[in-house]
Length: 425
Image (cartoon, rainbow, N blue to C red; front, side, top):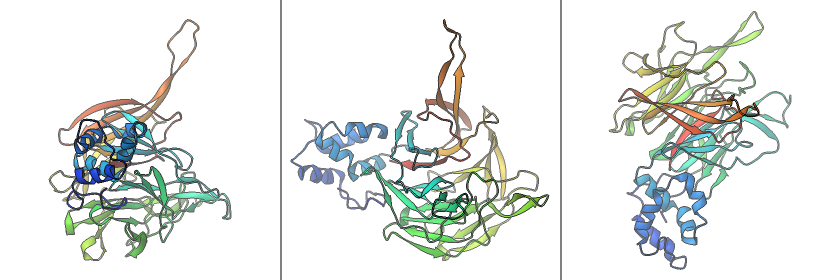
């Protein structure tokens, strides 16, 4: 097996040759072979090409397959062979609703087990999901705690979970120093660290309530511990975070969000949304600098959904925003959002868009349900299966294509509250 831990990303430079690790693994278990008549390293390469959604069913084929398909060697092979990214969708509270993985190449959905249940809390939302190496993390959020008072007031969560794809189970990690939801988060792959910034206690059931915070923390995967960093220049919740730059020049960008609030007629609270961004220079001890407004007053009310497309040759990434049915590209030179394209098929008022990047393409996702009113002999209505309608934009070619797949969810998905992330397995 590979010598790297399950919580760190595997690299060919630090791992022994794959055929040697696999041979050692299988030799220690009754000299098992993967495919009769073929060397194990060739067999392993063949099995690593199988879509991830099929692996759980194939583990029952034989002892050798179960051993290999549960090993770090499989993940290393898939990463070295540039397997495609998978979408991870959390439709609701992951303690009661299974998250699902989606493979855009095979159109296959694969359920993940729910989070460990805490009998005292419920209604988790506004959490963050992020991948680091071959692991998936769920951090923070807002929830209701039956041990708190008053019972109808949501509380922020400091819990951190990691899904281990080798054991196919969730692990409970050290909690954050400050509980938070609706915060900016980014993973640092080369150093196996995660940084969180800002956030608050807002719950999706309440429009403009909840606390705000400016604290920043860094998580060390190997040590399983959190340390405090310099806080944001001001309170900021509901923000988004991403990385810019390479090597020592990396910067942690925190965009948008809300801070102070005002009241309408002295009664109804209304958020004051930020139009600017804050940038942490990681190589200079985590010092912050502020950028000016990214749009003029009245141009838009708040920042839309953000995705970042990394440059294949290590150049500056492209930052895109979905605002309604329009896609904008961020220009660093002018600190402005420039219109890139329009979504071909607009969403109705009762529908919402999901927005993710997979293999360099922008996916605009809608969950569609309906009833087929086609006349039959008995004039009965036939329910039409729910589908995921994906409109996919290629930033370099500036072209659109569509993808339709049957939805694994038997209830409507609200992408305003659902959480999405991507992982490469």
